[in-house]
Image (cartoon, rainbow, N blue to C red):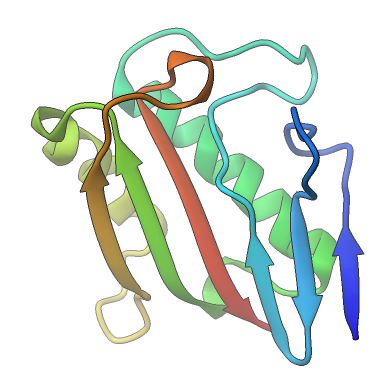
Length: 127
């Protein structure tokens, strides 16, 4: 059985998907791009600014699911340009600063992301 998670405190889905789904004791988020939930607009700016917005969206979704950033076990980061890795990693590292509890992660360069975002991140977390 699955439970759908939708919160107004994160970017709304732009297609036929949900912000997250809970199955058992795991939360699976959809990939988040830097859309400001207050305006519905993309955050323009460098990859650092975009990563901050993406992580705020992920945090809101996980909290709405009854989980949290501290319970993330896996993330996948999609970058439009791998040259942005260090800048993205700097922001990401502030949120997941404790090496002992940081999630596993994959980072992949892709040809293009929705709305021409520079970064998209999805997560799996426990409840």
